[in-house]
Amino acid sequence: AQKMLVGQNGFVTMFLFVDAEKSSQNQNPGSPADSTQHEDGKIKPDDVRVRPDSVLFICLAGTDRSAIGEGWVRKLSPPTTTASAGLSSHFEGAAVSSESQRLAKASGFTLEHHRARKLSLEEARRSDIIVFFDRMDLLDFSERCREAGDTECVTKSRVLMDYIDRERRYTIADPYHTGNHADVFRLIELGVRAMLEQENFFRTEAGLLDIVTQQKRQLVRANQRIFELQNQLKGKTEVAALVPGLKGQLRAGLTGTAQIIEQVRDLQFKYKDVCSKYEDSKETLASRLAEMNQQRDDLKRALEKDRRQHEEIERRNEEIRSLKRKLAKCRRELEGEARSRATLEERIGELLLSGGT
Image 1: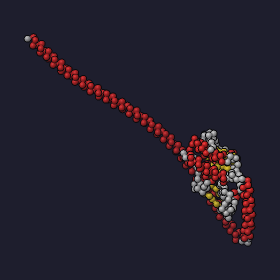
Image 2: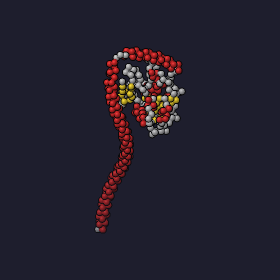
Image 3: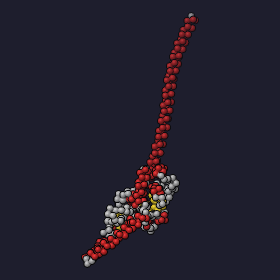
Image 4: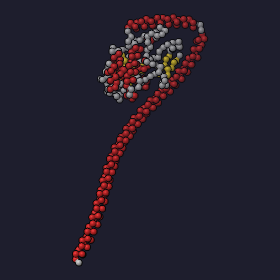
């Protein structure tokens, strides 16, 4: 039977071709392993795993999230080889943000000397586990691996938050854009602790031997059950008659699945195109906003200059009005003096005439 898993974002993530009776028991490839002990006392196949020796954290820039994950692994599991890198070379050589450095120092490790660097596929091939924080980054990395003809890197890739809640398909956003450094730091710590536990980083050799022993017993019981089922199916030719029809249905289902995959790939490309246009629009809007802010500041300075000029004009107008008042007062005084002089001259004339007679 064929089982197709579709995530909440609409992308087909993986396919399983499993036996019908075991499809409800097996785990998804590329998913974190469950804990060793289960409620029914059985051991799942993924529980018997060799302890990983190395883990590689990958985010877009390689500055904050991947560096924090690397720092937590160095603190919690010192024997483990760990590293971090970014998909983009735009931030290569950049340091971790000051807020993340402060949180790391408060948690007992340092990110002071970390510098971002671009991921190489060779480094990914050498790592036992590859951990992402964002599903779009995982899709981008998977495309690069497939183009390079490398599927092993895809199968050992994980999303960190799947170790905590695989059903909800959480991602951890870049704090460079959201600003919530403390929340991101705490989520990465929880995810790393869950990863170290579920991926057998803490598994001892004695515990592995116990698991192998229990697994052998499970295999014996499974072989006995298969033998019983084979005996029950002997002589039932009607089952064989149904096989051709089931094969035809399976081929038709595979054809439909291939069409769905093609449609999903088209949607992925369209989504990436929309994201690219959104980023371009965001940069254009940011540039336009900066220009408008500059124009606003220029207008403020021009208005302030006009206001000072207006105040200067008002001051000078007031001085002119004051001078006009003084001038009018002087004119009145001069007119009064002119009248007094005329009167005085008339009086002198009269006196001169009277003195002559």
